Structure formats: C-alpha cells, structure tokens
Amino acid sequence: MTAWDHRCVPVTPLSTPDRSAYLLAARGEPVPHTPVWFMRQAGRALPEYRAAREGITMLESCTRPDLVVEITLQPVRRYGVDAAIFFSDIVTPLQFAGYDIEIKPGIGPVSADPIRDAAGVAAVRPVTAADVPFTTEAIQQLVSELGGTPLIGFAGAPFTLASYLVEGGPSKDFAKTKAMMHGQPDLWHALADRLADVAIAFLSVQVEAGASAIQLFDSWAGGLSPRDYERFVQPHSAKVFEAMKEYGVPRVHFGVNTGELLGLMSEAGADVVGVDWRVPLDEAVRRVTAAGGAPKPVQGNLDPALLFTGWETIEPEIDRILAEGKAAPGHIFNLGHGVPPNADPEVLRRITEYVQVKSAHVPA
View (spheres, rainbow, N blue to C red):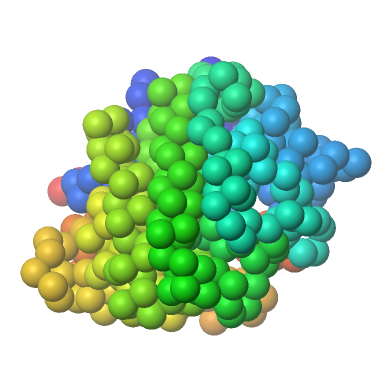
C-alpha cells in the first residue's frame, strides 16, 4: 500500500488515518500542520479525470468501483492533499430510492417527474447497503490504497436533495420548494424525513466500509431565511447527524452563502462547520458560539475565484485565512466552494504545499 506526496512519488503512509493532520484538526487536537483538501478535488479540473470519464455519464461513473477508486485517488497523487473525498454525487442514492433522475452536463441533476404530492413522496423508498454494493467495494479498496490518508464520505442534506426533487432541477429561487414548505408543511416534512433516511443510509454504508469522516452538503440552504431553516430544515439535518453520532467519526456540515445560518447549522449536530468565502473564519467562529455553543473546528475558505489570479494575490489570502483559522480549536484549509472545472491543477498543488509548509509546527 502506498500514499503519495505532492511530487507523485510513493511515500510510506501512516499505519492508520487516526493520527492524520485532517482527523486531528477535525477533533480540535494539536496538528503537525494545517490539513488541506479541496471540495470537488476528485475530478473536474484534472485532465486525467476527463480521460478516465470519457464517454461515461456522471451517474454511471459513480457506480463503477474501478472508476470511483481511480478518480478519488487522482488528487491525492497530484496535490498531496491531507484527505481524499469519495468520488460520487449527492443524487447517486436517489436512483436507488425509486426516483428517476439524471445529471445533464452543464445543467446538473434534473427530473421529468418532480415531486408535488403525497404520491410522489410515498414513491421515495428506503436505501440499503444492498442497493449500493459498488460503494462498499470502492471504499474498501480505497482505504487499502490510501493507507494513513483519511477518506471522507459524504451525502446531500435533506433540503438540498428535496430542492432537486421538487423543482425538477437546479433553481435560483427555490420557489416551488418554499411553496411546499409553507403551503403543505406536512408534505414537506414527510419528504424531508424520507430524504434524511436516504442520507443516513448512504453515509452509514460509507463509514461501515471504512470512511474516516463524513460531510453533509446542504449546498443550497443559503437560499433560506434563518427562521425557515430552523423550522423546516434543521430538524431533518439534525436527524442525520444524530444517526451518524454512534460511528464516532467527525461530522462536517457545509453550505453555500450560509453565513446567516452558521450557528443553526452547527446546532444541527456538526463537529466541524464548513464556511464559504463570504465570512472570515474568525467571524464564523463568533457566530457559531454566539448562542452559547462551544467553539468548533472550521473548514475553509479561500475564494475559488482567486485560483485565476497570480500567486502574489493568493499567498497573502492564504496567510490571512490561516491566521483567522487560529480562532477555532481546529482548522481544515479548503476552498469556500468547489474547485472550478477550469482551474489550473498546478495552482492547487502549490496551495497545498504552501499551506502545509507555512503552518508546520517544528518541535522545539
């Protein structure tokens, strides 16, 4: 078994991910350096990813263990990041929950049969490990290949999954979703509860196969007011986090444009709060603790747009983020959203190395 450093040279891995910089930071323990990984690092910007997926649809690639393993490992080899994230998509388990959905290039998840009534909700069935054997197979192989590098499992949060099912595709205002929330609250809660079960099942399969941490993506929760989030969304995300608590792995929560929701998202049960680029990390810590909660590790939050500027712009921003991250008991460096598809892989490799070296703690 080998792990890989940023020069793509085999290196001897730690015997277990437990003492990795990523898991230490996620637990708020002292770290050898600030760990770094990138959302959407598995794919998109990498030419080797595009070559591996040529002629294969997104959802098909998520169900082929050989491709999942290869694509998950690619950024670890290329960048030398401190954690791998399982290659999949948040809508992958919906295929096995009785819902007809596809990912259209350049658009995103779409369906010709949106959920608008009780019959549609009733058609969403539970997901079991038997539905996703490819996930178990891929993760078991990845854990063997990664050695001491932790693997992050993930799932879509109930609200974000529901937004695709109710709207029929991506939305800018989530008007139909909000209309169901307010106009048919019982129907909404029934749908969100079923989708919480889907997320729990998918995450459980990943952790039981060997994932060292999980991240719940509520990508579009930033479209909600704090009042609506607390009433319609938080209970269902909390159900997911509570169910995952028994596994004892770090639980990360992330959404885009959720600065006004950080405290509520933390209260839902996250161990680590993901922060997009709009809120400084020290301010995020203040918001998380404002209601009397304990400080928690944070993840983030370089603006992905800066990847297209020069290093003279990126370096001081990294320094600022590292300094702000010290306000938290642990900091995991990341982008404030996913890697853009046209990002330069060399810039991401350089960021990884810079963060690791700049933040390194040299023993006295």
